[in-house]
Length: 119
Image 1: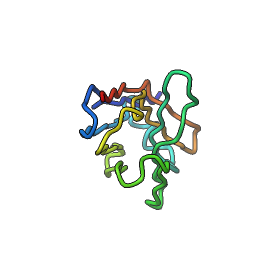
Image 2 (image 1 turned 120 degrees about the vertical axis):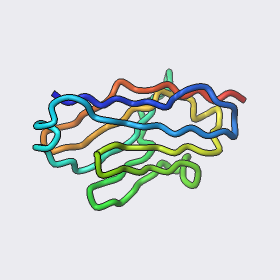
Image 3 (image 1 turned 180 degrees about the horizontal axis):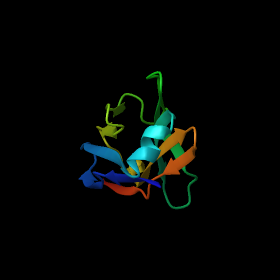
């Protein structure tokens, strides 16, 4: 079994920055046996549909929501950790942020970390 655990959320003033992290826990055998096709960050706010924030595929190609382009940066490391650097945060960025893996064995989604941006 594989679990994704997000961290780094919190309360920040508008214009501030946060760095989210996502790490996998569970069976090392399972993690190493799967092919990770893409990793991404999604967010969900009350009354709104969950949306893609940023995504990076196995080739390193990144995709960003228009609303975060130029402010957020997605990155990963060789240990399969995923990061989201969020700068110039706005109140409309307030949401629960989820980490997601797209793998040869299906999709994995973390429990989420709350990001709250005050005006």
